[in-house]
View (spheres, rainbow, N blue to C red):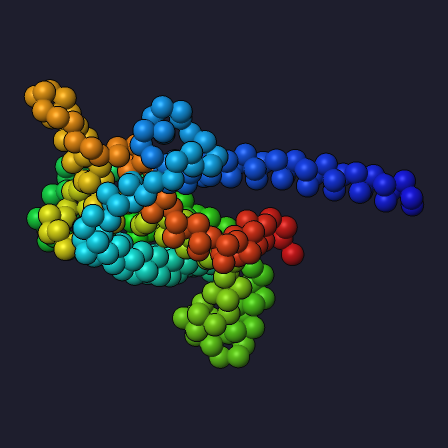
Length: 294
């Protein structure tokens, strides 16, 4: 008994130490980015990255927020797309995966194959662009930022496995009480699937938050530009000014290029960094639940 207790304590100590070291290794790059964004351009170029800023400077952030109205508008567009896309995408993903997970649905294998087939073959960028612009009329439309990422085949298949792990007796109990299919899904299945749905919603949200390519393809109206594409354009303009000054012999503008990039990185990852702790318990449950079928 005593030997087992000692072995368990040793195992826990080694396990926590190993996990703690991994956490530190994951945290160091983040600290380097934050420290670099708060350093002066001269010190960063001369001495490289440090865990603590060598000479505190907010030039990178001043460059980003030079037009606060534009960046706030872009942030508002990104927030709108994030909330609308994540909510609708998570609901449609759960609804689709629930239907094809039901064994009493006659055509579930056909629909599962069709959904999987779309992940293997695609029409290509040009036909997709023509479809979105000429037929769906989504040029300069906020829906062009939401619809393309609305549903993901991988997330549907993951949620399908999640719903398949839920005992069918729960569905039968709902039918006995006189509930219809939609009510069973909304009141019985969705609450049980909350951990998996929260995990999927996080990944869907990250996809919307980090997306800038759809804005590059479909958005020309500056009032509809999301934050990521706005920062992307800002960085390209900075690079263009430096290259133009180097080629023409003009004085190189005093632009904090490196700290500017790091400041943009911090601004983009900050919302995710603050939201993730609130969803962590759901993510852990979503990864582990269903691994053992009751």
